[in-house]
Image (cartoon, rainbow, N blue to C red; front, side, top):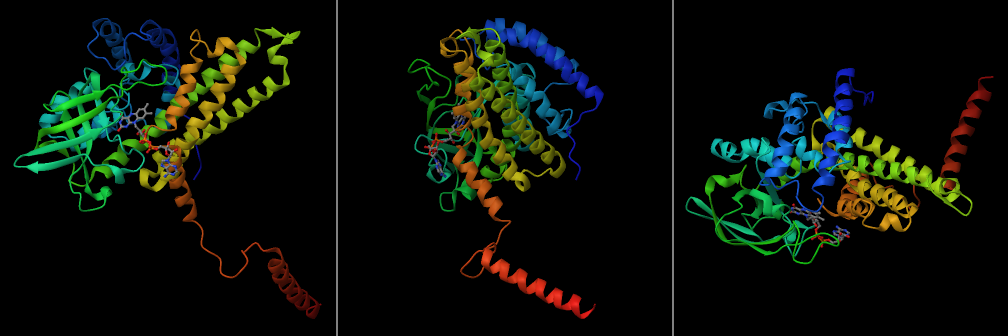
Length: 435
Ligand SMILES: Cc1cc2nc3c(=O)[nH]c(=O)nc-3n(C[C@H](O)[C@H](O)[C@H](O)COP(=O)(O)OP(=O)(O)OC[C@H]3O[C@@H](n4cnc5c(N)ncnc54)[C@H](O)[C@@H]3O)c2cc1C
């Protein structure tokens, strides 16, 4: 198959428009609302009055909620075009909101579109897609995140209701959300991958309690957007179970596959921004009689960063292209896992170099670099730690190999030389006999 990441001139014109629009209209929102308003807070009147007109301009360009396929009312641009869009959005926190593709609302919307009832779609999906409400996706539990075998949050059927009991952890944006999609165990007698289901829970459901708010990095204790939740016999109607009972993980995989590629491409944008900052700074400041840009150590860092970004960008685009070509996340899971594993490494390396090259200014709160660097470790944990995704890659890679019989491996030199000698001597005998 020929690999082609090019886009037609009409779509390139849209990307050029988007590039300018994000610089001129969206990045200022990041600065204006910095530390005061979360992009997920849909109740802030000032933010709404500024964001809504921008969202309309995005809609006029046919660039709104582009993660949705045509069957769900989206433009169906495919993953390569989405990746190129996300690369631009990686420069801004508010970008995803303005373009209607923010996680976890994007994945939650897809689940509701596929599995929600008409009433649920009208009540939750329509305002979610219109950018009027936020949502939460809640799977991780306090005692176990990477391994679902430790999940214990249960839903038990009682008449025409499900009763949910248990705890969840890092339920991001809960404080701004109107509803959650929660992974619950509906059948504890079978392996968790067959005994778990997804359930829709209104955020104001009776019995749903915030144990504590959890923040990131240096946010003050007791504050933050990733709470520890407790479900005290929370009751929801039977139809709030999304999809078939026991299909929770199948649904989860569908929503995470594309999302990982979008996160990765936004990280390309973040890493490129860090390299831009580094280059500008080292060309602007001298030490020991020459520009910092003239120090060989710094030049190597610039080269290493450029190479890493190029490799990573091509890897992500290739994965996006594969999704478009193959159309089945399960068949290319090794590529999606590869992108997930590469993301934190590139961010951590490239942003660290940029931060260090800025000296004290780089680690200070006068520059965005420390916050950008933190996105590296976060990307290594959120949606599952790198080790788990490396396990996936290794298992898939190993499927292409078989054990070799005998004491020595197939590339054992003495064995191969002996075989080659026998083969060549037989040929020589044949050639001489035919002279
Ligand atoms: C910013 C952020 C937002 C998040 N938002 C959400 C959200 O909205 N909803 C939600 O449900 N969850 C969310 N999470 C949680 C996230 O999915 C979990 O943190 C993640 O799955 C890891 O689980 P854990 O934190 O319990 O780590 P643990 O499971 O305790 O793992 C700790 C460490 O153990 C090691 N490890 C784990 N498994 C293996 C293995 N198989 N082999 C070798 N080493 C291993 C790794 O080093 C890993 O980092 C979010 C996390 C972050 C950081």
